[in-house]
Length: 456
Image 1 (cartoon, rainbow, N blue to C red):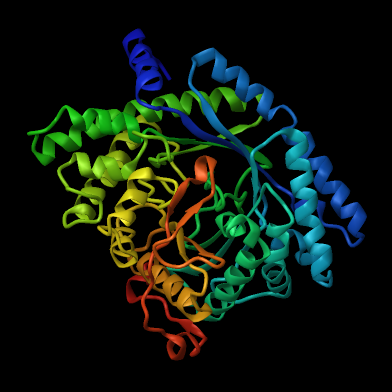
Image 2 (image 1 turned 135 degrees about the vertical axis):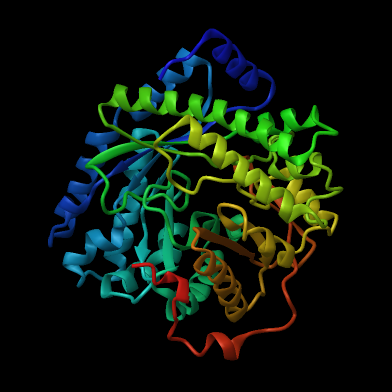
């Protein structure tokens, strides 16, 4: 990669005035070789492998931060989906599996990373014994750890939607909220339900080190909503074609910076560079909002008519610009529209321009889905499962990755405010439908894959 001085100076301006940062560098680690029938030996192997691969990650990332002056907000680890690692010894009981989560948390704290992902399973066609136990353990595992994140893939375009898993997950989400009720159901912020989950996603809670990856590899996730908003602010009368070109050029520059950082951190710790996730990932900070970009395009308030079209153009332009900047694209790559983590989205909910139904419509063109959505604590299991099933159908029919992070805030009602703090932000509680879908989700079984999945 070759950089000129103007490109470097422009990138530094993005950092100093437009909130550009690298959202995360995530080191993926293979744990398949750690399986052992003896639990203590198993846990020791996990500890040894993670420390061996990641003990210099934070130190070297901070070194690269200082070298280029570009902040890396999070340093993270992802591991092989734990249901696969415990699979050869599936007779373990749930308490033993929870000990695995606690060991992951302990090691993550020891090496200084912010989160560790991979307490996860793929159940889109069926649920194995080890999958079942891991899923049942999630509420207590996430309730008793700080850094561990979990993702469960319940659907794919090729397989359809496993409604048995969707039903079970509705109950797991409610239990997880109760386990962490003193923190407003915070455990649910560390649990994502996926369709077409990417195996190289560097963002939490979906990050995992999937099949086909190297023994270890480093992925990077860029950010930059503030940079894109700054560009659009100066294009008040520009038509959509030219506006797309401006966004593409900006995404190109952001991606170049991201790959440079990722490659250098990977080289410093002696691992393989993997992918750049092109997603625009907002934060609660003022000016770092995807919703504000949509409003800057001319929509009065995010959620109003035109919002989905604006988001579609933004996401497409970001992908096109990023694709010109790197040959190593992965993860989710697009635009995130979390509710609590984006101050503009939270304001849209407060102003009632954004409903859960409009949010669902917008997820058809974004890159993640219903993300960090606080709902009333008394929302039924069946309604939660129905919302997940709706999102799964969008991902399956459109052959795209979608994640769901719903947070039924214990004791909270629609319109109340929930605060999580830090990057997780705050938002009003979103009202869900008064009408249920129990008879629908109780059918169970698997919703078949669509006809266009037959691509062989």
